[in-house]
Length: 427
Image 1 (spheres, rainbow, N blue to C red):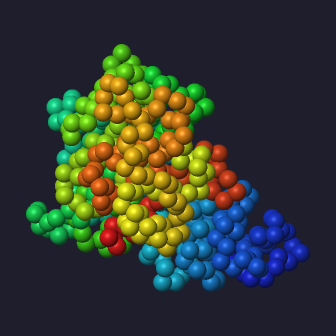
Image 2 (cartoon, rainbow, N blue to C red):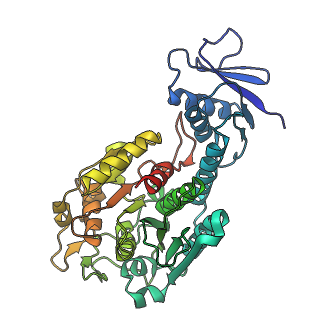
Image 3 (cartoon, rainbow, N blue to C red):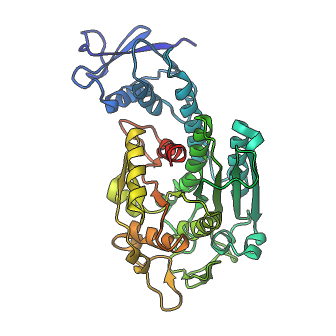
């Protein structure tokens, strides 16, 4: 199969066949015309989508491309059915681009996997195996499955996942390149791994449930980020906690009105079984806090409210530690992954009151009511240190495109992987 050579030019399109003003194709060559927008990465993405829609299967990036132009093209040209069909420019950026692509493909493929093929245990195994494939010598793990979660007090994951015949899992993956078993933990990553979310007894509509295979996008994103950091030369010890479960309806499923008692003594009334992500993340955050790590980042496809606020182009940042939040926001700028800070203060912890527990897991209103994304973050803040020092919560509003767009294909995006990897290396 032949490759179409793709060039970037600052000259306007000629009179031959043109697919819009940004792209022209002539035989085995195509040109992306950035006449007035030489650094406009959105135009590169639009051209990549046009080529995909024209049925182009393989491309070779030729001529002079900046690294971010190459990456923008790859993000938009790569689809669920067309991967590893790009030849990078023959320049000094090949290694970095190849590492990014490896992490991106892993993150997208696992997020796009069908819920039948990706049970909680398979998700945990797949993430561990992928990281071991990068550096098997320095990866180890332990896990709690099914009833063992209850025995060890990981009650959020246990209750959310007990309605499924496929048991829930908390897996701890330890990347320790130091070789010292007593080395301090420099950072912890926590990922929401809901492999399918029916909403439980607060059942979703058929339309709302269709894309819920992506509800483990947080687990995929933090795993992809750790892998990319490792490929970039990470030398610090990092622990990864993946909170994996299926949120299904059965005679053994958790119910509205249940009260969950967590390891730290916090009691939570379940007023919405579809607000399950925060319930499983609470366990992961407590496990991460127990390590003494000075940096904890969690990532989750947590709330529709974040998507209402930011659309599908930005991820949402929440932190009580505003200095950390600003630093990681700058990393997202440097890594060309749009992010935005939404409000979080200590008083957000009390926005979901309960007469039967310390807090409810949401408000009994559609979407959690006003400020739903901030209220969810406030709930999570109960499970880290009192001041929230060193903790950042990322609501992955941009993790998945159910219908695609003029710049991105249908499905998972892997947006956030580069930002988190950068934080692991810089913090």
